[in-house]
Length: 242
Image (cartoon, rainbow, N blue to C red; front, side, top):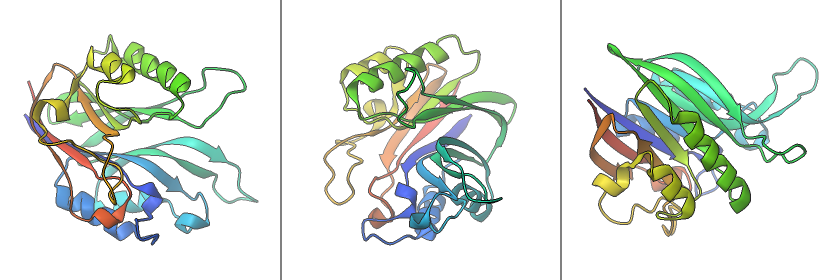
């Protein structure tokens, strides 16, 4: 069974031209022809910067997909208005069966606003465990977060995919920790540097698709439909589930 997955930091819909345009994000996703899409930096009624939109709800409706959302920040609004949230999300052509949110709150009093979204998805007759995350820039917190992810998933009964903006370089300590367990899709089948940030001057590979040994990676590539849509390029991979 073959599936196409993609990870995309959408920068709350604001492009490199400083213009808020969620239609551009939707068009990039549509043209990628991906089945499952991990999203970073998603606003949900968050602030004026994104017109207080429910961005993931809008994208899911616009693209006719199922979705899940995990807040990294959740702030109280005035009166009866919905909570103002910012975080990570998942879009899927297939049904999302379950959703859990694991907040990265490891040290009392130290809260940065990071989390991992843990979902199970029904893909035809099989169930796949798909995770979305956005890791810290802080080296100390990054070490704790990568260790948590590896421990969380080491005894998983389902095939596993982990995607997101991991804020690390290939062959760094965090990358080596994760790739002891998971395959880096770009390393296996990507061509070139795979730099995803920034779209104005690509110099860093920050966005990753990791899969366990239940998958063969057929292809990995950048989605370059509209570089102005966000400050990150999306990365997509075609996978074969054994």
